[in-house]
Length: 142
Image (tube, rainbow, N blue to C red; front, side, top):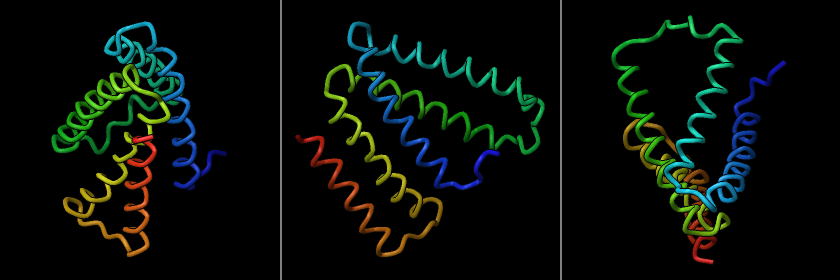
């Protein structure tokens, strides 16, 4: 049975993100970073297509509305831009310095989540965000 814990899935995501950085750094070493991003995207499309077919989820369209579609479109555009920038950074820099700086997205999400989504963080939460930001900057500066 798959875990329903968000912590389980978040930690699994972090592990795969670490593998992503290492594998991408090796993979992008001899090819154009934009081509590498395209290849990665094709792999993701294929894997997700097989997963959706195997689980019958292509037919689950409830909840689709123009607003949801607009924000999924914007999310896809942001993801594509992020991947292009990330692979370009990996092509030019060390994975051990690029990946932490990329994780400043955690800081940006916290700030935007409060400003746009009305989410709240405790004092401990804000201290954690500050430490993540400082840590990412310190690691990236080497």
